[in-house]
Structure formats: C-alpha cells, structure tokens
Image 1 (spheres, rainbow, N blue to C red):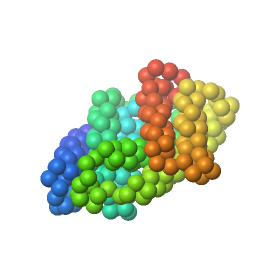
Image 2 (cartoon, one colour):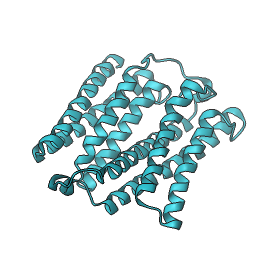
Image 3 (spheres, rainbow, N blue to C red):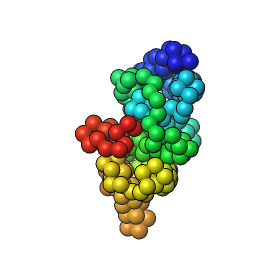
Image 4 (cartoon, one colour):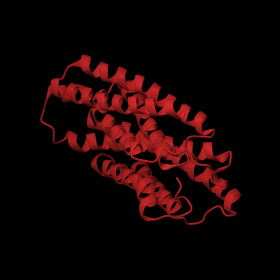
Length: 271
C-alpha cells in the first residue's frame, strides 16, 4: 500500500505542476480551451490525491493526519478541493492560475517531509483525531482560497484594462463577496477545530486549554478572522482593508502550521 502511495504521490506532484503550467498558459495565451484542460486535469489529480490519502490510511492503519507529511498532503488536498468548488460555482477559471501554484508549493513541502510510518503517540489515539484534524484541514483550505482571492483583489486594480481580465475576473464587489464567503467557511471550521481540540485536550491531558504555542496561535488566527467578520458586518469594512485582513490571517495560518512546529515546540510538535 505504501509503495503504491509513493507512486501515486509522485504522479500527483507532477500533475499539479502540469496544471500550474496549463493555467499560466491560459493567462498568457488567453485561450478558453486551455482553461478547460487545466480544470479537467486538476479534477483528475484531485481524485488521485484522494487515493493517496486513502492508501496512506490503509497502509498506516490509522487516519493519515498525524505528522507534517500527512497534514501537508491533506492541506494541499483541501486547497485543491475548495478552489475547484469556487472555480466551478463562480465560473472563475483564472482562480486556478493563482491556486495551483499554492497547491504545488504545499505538495512540494510535503515531498520534503519524512514519509516514515511511526506508531501513534498515546495522546493521538482518540476518536477525536478525525474530527479535530479534518475540520482544521477544511478551515486551512478555505482560508487559503480566501488568501488567493484577496491577492487577486489587491492586484486587480493594478492590472491594465484588458477585455480578458474584465471577462474572467469578477468585479471588485463580487470578488470581495466571494472572499468573504470563503473566510466565513474557514471560520466555521476553525471554530469547530478549536472546540473539538479543547474537548480532546481535556480527555488527553486533563485540561481544556494549556496555552501550548499551537493552541495560542490558533486562537490568534481565530481572533484575526473574527475581527475581519465583525468589522465587515458591523462597520461595513470591505475592499482593500478586508483583503489585507484575509492575507494577514493566512500568514498566521501558515505560521501556526509550519512556524510553530519549527520555532516553538510544544505538546503539538508532532502535528
């Protein structure tokens, strides 16, 4: 199983690279057929990507979410899934040109991590693992898409007037609304992540909250997005201010995932 997983992982890595090239070609050559090919390829690769996670779980005989490699693969999977949903829902193929490079970076990061299957730590042997980590994966994927949408919003004003961009990038108001919906989705799942993590922590360590670095930075991230939603709903903040909040929030997401494990080891250092 693990050998088959390694082969499929390599195919997925190459597939996302190819999808990135196709998306860039679509933007440069401005041909609709290339965008459709990129969308079909990303969809096919997502199916294989799902198979990688399934094979990993079968081979390891547990949920494939307990180390840096597995979470990175899952994070890339969520980015791919959520971006595809938004591309299809809003007929927004240019989103793929911005999303696939980020997916490629994350799957590339996964390729640099150890793929060794190790026995699970006692604290991880809980039915809460699937709920807690799955919600985190979806939250991170949604925040990643909101980050991409916010970058498009910020750079859109600097793009030269062109019929292609006008046709394929929504008007600023709609782009801002799509980003808001992505943040709202991420916020819902991040809240569930923190709640399930607190319940799990009480069972594992006897305390709902331990101010572990990862817990602390998850809370910081939650607060940033909560401010984003509060200011938007109560003060009507939109546009560039909201976009910058989404960008800063995703920087915190990345630091919570990679930075904390690298620079601030704690009881979550295995994840």
